[in-house]
Image (cartoon, rainbow, N blue to C red; front, side):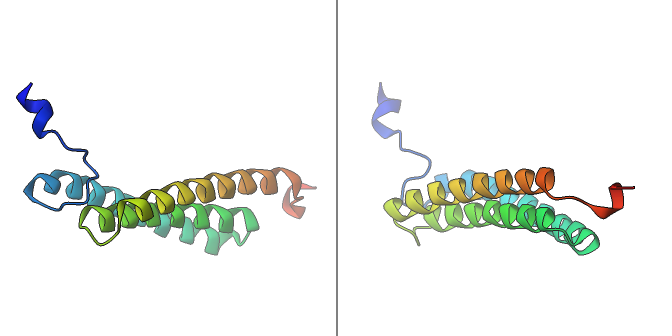
Length: 114
């Protein structure tokens, strides 16, 4: 029962030594998102299509989500702002991916019309 009295949510607004594992995970997520963003930008530069641009924007939202989490854990962002931004970025990310798929399926590519 003592454990329950000292338990705290991982995303609480106080920064301390117990936040270090969470910060490490957020840093790894941000690094992975940044690598994906670089790869996505490279693909967009080669393809220059609207679908690729939408995917790059979605990956940017994923990176922004990691940044919001990091700011929240370090206490630079209030819990209310954290939740609003994080869920807002989730909506943006999903909308961009759906738009990319829709765009890819509805636009014609002269390369493949032959």
